[in-house]
Length: 86
Length: 80
Image (cartoon, rainbow over all chains, first blue to last red; front, top):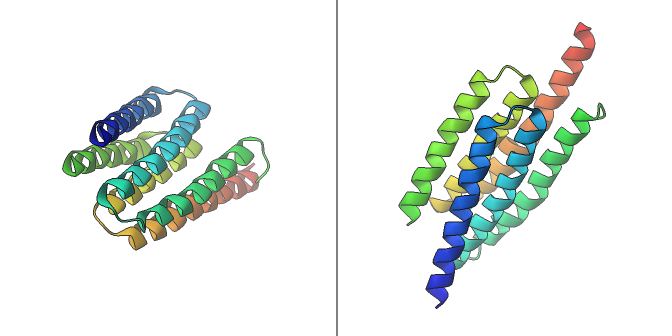
């Protein structure tokens, strides 16, 4: 049961990566690409957390934590740049 | 399973790097370069190197994107 759930979660994460990369490639404006990058960061954090559970190494959750803080900062920096702030 | 995931991530790194080279808008190219670094960080985690992944996530994807945007803004303000 648990392995079926994990497999479904991995399939959903891969689907999310595929859709976000498609949006990144065909998106014309910078807003599309920034939204795709933001979705990819969230998907990557869930991928790292999933892999930490699968491989039983909970040190990987620290990476997901640090990445969650820093990706938020990066997206906020790009948004501030587009509003002529930074 | 992990090998398939690493292969998909490597393909995404290549796509992001090609986009970062080919895009004409500098902001979009910067975002794509940060994305290549993001995929590299996830790839490092899957290859069992969490400390390298943490450094790559903090410096490559966070700090360098901000510094690039700052440099683009300053050079555009000086050029105009």
